[in-house]
Amino acid sequence: MRYDIIMSKSCSKSFGPVFKKLRESRGFSQERVSERVGVSPAFICMIESGVKYPNLEMLFRLSAAIEVRPSVLIAEMENRLK
Image 1 (tube, rainbow, N blue to C red):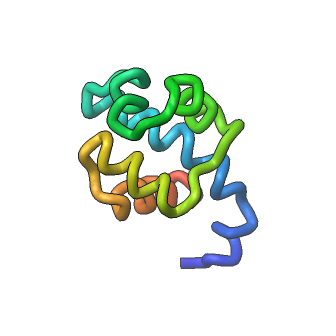
Image 2: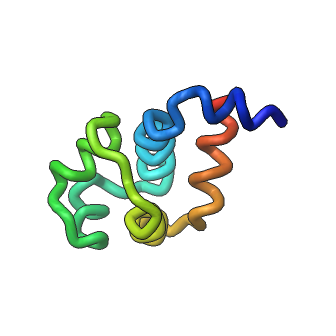
Image 3: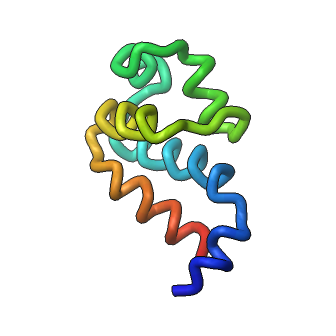
């Protein structure tokens, strides 16, 4: 796999749509995720729209909130960037 190509694309911009897709497929609302993570629903909206980007700790918290492994989120981002 050509990681230089992947890294040249906007990895951070791909997180929001991937997270939203997984969140919805798991049946979680933004409000429910925000309660589980301890942030506002507006923050979840900003992440999903690409305004904000999660750091590593938040990535783990978000993945736990929708009951998926962090590696699943990362693999989905990687697939999106191919």
